[in-house]
Amino acid sequence: MERIAIIDVGSNSARLIITETYNTGAYNMVYSQKEALRLAQKLDKKGALTPQAFTDTLDCMHNFASMCKLYKTQRIFAVGTAAMRNATNGAELADAIRQKTGIKLQVISGKTEAYMSYLGVINTIPEKDALIFDLGGGSTELILVRNRKLVESISLPIGCVNLTTNLKLKNKLSPQGALKLKKAIAAQVNKVPWLKAGNIPLIGVGGTIRTLGKIDQKRVKYYTPKLHNYQFAVRDFKATYKYLQGTTLAERKQMGGLAVDRADIIIAGAAIVNALADKTKAKRLIVSGCGLREGIFDEYRSRTLKRPVITKDILATSTDDLLHLYSTDIEHSTLVSDYALMLFDAWRDLHNIDASLRPILRTAALLHDVGIRINYYSHARHSGYMIENSVLFGVDHIKIVYAAIMAAWHNGVSRSYMRSKQYKVLLSEIVLADLAKCALMIAIGEALDYTQSSHLTKVTARLGKNGAILNITAPSTPSIELHQLKILEKWFMKAMGVPLIVKVHK
Image (cartoon, rainbow, N blue to C red; front, side, top):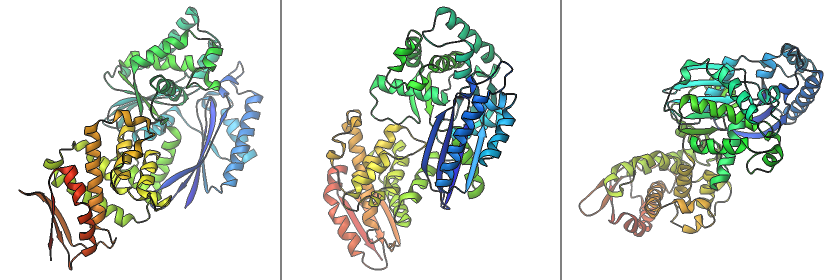
């Protein structure tokens, strides 16, 4: 096990995350801290960071260094972005940080910042083509992605803090202020010809897009507080932006989803998002909770684990990471998943479940027993809870719910699992029937390896004239597995409408 600390000193805030990593590839965040430094507001007329900026940053880094020592971190990766990059004495601050705290902070270029943000997004959100924007306090990095590859990137010197400060946008936005804001943003955005990409989503990184996502979730009474990969329509964002322009600072501080420390800078940030939406003619906004820090972590893991820095299958990789973090028997879980997927394919004409649920079934089957980490009794329900509340990448929120229900039901369908869930109104009877069938396939897979000895030589399935046939080849009669399959016959008949016929071969 190794503990990695990543520090990001931005124009608005400084952040520290500490993550435990394992040789298997599994990892788990164990600590996170954020401090609002507002370095973009602490510049003198010559563009140098003020003594107050130095004092505040050094105090913050002392605290971060203490937490790294307390958590016994083996490695610290620390970067400074736009505020330090653009300040005439940014390198001097980095040197002071090294001398006073021992933290070797690197002031990175806009290109490097854009690339790391790209890695954080592309390894966690399954969009092939998109415009990624990392909107910070002092800059906005733009990244054009085609077929998951970075094809263009640029760092623009506009952010929610420096625009707010330079244009004195402290309270309600006046018509004159709105015009100045629009012109200031257009002066930068119009320099980027490839922004006219058209018909691709905007994926946002940073506090502005997270705040806008929270506001929209409050508006629609969203069923989960998860923000990463939350998607909403540009037209809905524009309605929010229009409303924000007419509010006072005091009113914004009372607004649901809007943190008090971001109330003064949200209009400038939203104005940048609005300009990008207009320029690209995007229809969707996607919130990414992963960016620069996750990109730094991904690059490090790629080197240490000797695997590609760009994840080929996001959901599969994320599931495998969780499996290695929580599973008590990886070999058994893998075999159950293999059996469940084989049944899904062999009986496709019987269950008629959309193929898009196949990777979700894989996730549920691999993680079906992780609830044992909480308590063996009712572990299926615990597994569902863990999946529902885990960090699973590469899939939308409702599909995570599907995987959770499949796992929760693998010992039998129980509607009580959803009794207090807000999302239950979103699940039709047809969807629930399909989830029950998937849970049944996990149950059969578990029955086929009930002794967790992998002693069956071969298992195949097909549809016969009189029912669904399951062929088992084993060196001796698998009496325990046959007993478990016998228990499932009634459930199978109810869910599939035909009998389960088990044939044993030697």
